[in-house]
Length: 623
Image (cartoon, rainbow, N blue to C red):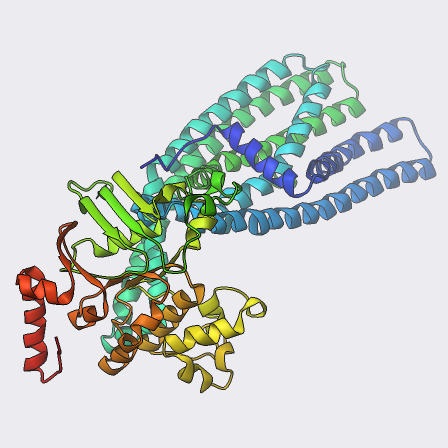
């Protein structure tokens, strides 16, 4: 598996973020430029006012002149403040759009298209969480780094201009201040990054646990056990421990940021003492008059403000520190976004549809499948889950796949869905390797019902069709609900197929039973009408009568399709053309029900065991 957590140079990340901002609105540089100039001029004008007042007093200016000049300065300062506030709001608004209209959309889209095997891994889940945190947390990643662009820019402008002003009076100021600033930034970068790198994994792990327990505590499904077994105290204690751990870790991380700030404070103190000493000596020596002395005094005070902040907000050092800290959030985002998508996506999306050329348009009777020497092993595992599998399935054939738990049946289904990729061998659809199909092309071929039920808190119709209500093919929807034996239930509801599944988003929604939800999912697979139908225990949540009703129309469900049906209850296998007994990732037995019973092998023994269980319980288990 490819490396997930990558580190990018800080300047590369800043450029990356700024490009995202620019792509959303080409006026972004203009907004920041105007805000930076206004943010610089407001305190600069304020710094000039005292020396200008002294100068007019020394020149014995009349009251109107004095009042007019002071009023002009005050109005100028006020206008720059208004402009700063306006553009602050505008930039914040644009930042919010980048954060939630661009970045969030891209992360959600990537989560749904990234290679499933990567997403399913612990590293992949953590990478996805890191990408989500990068835009959702106010003080990290995208939000904070975008907020810091503006103070970084206008503070840098202030430092440059003030340095130029100070050079004629104090020519040594540029090299001294430059050395101090460079040393401080280097210290800050090294210490701050070391702190976050050291505790990064602990922060992620703690945040994931907090999120997990919070979701479980608010789940209506889990609420039954929580109340019955009085788990609330246990949950609260665990959450309290996790929050305390997080606070403890963040205190340690903050110490790594405190040290550079302490260093900067010391450097600033040394710098100010030197500068004030020089100015005072020049004033006492008569080299500076009161006006000039006051002006340079304001410039030095302002210089400290540009570096360390104060009434002007975050200074250059703080802005730089925050942007360095937020660099990790951008690393997480970029690392996740650069993960590969499914193998049959992206480059092949825009290629010509070659189904007809390769025979895959012949779907009236299903499609052919072939596994050629297929091996699959989970990352980090020591042995194959599927080993040297060879299997052919004819077009339109209904296959039952049976075997003990852990035999690799569900893994085989995920391979057919394209979620996993063989380590060795080939999987062919109508003679064409599945990795040669585009994403759009291949997804049209496969319909599936999985063990874990995935329904959305939208209408029944939208859950079945997987699209907006106005785009749904109503006759096709009715047929799918009939075949899945859910139509009568749906039509009995006040809003019929427009009834919401669950009441999570709609107070009038319905809490369907597990069996009803399973029938809705079966209707979803039938609505898609794909030539390959994969059913992973599609009736496990149904009662025996409902299950029998489904089986009685099994041939209608699979008409015109190639079907692979994973079953644990072997009574269902008699509806299939062939039965594959699967064990340790290999085909151990292959044949019809009668043929396998005559062999008296593993399938026959499993069938007999289940028969005895049903007979002991008084059930009917007809061979």
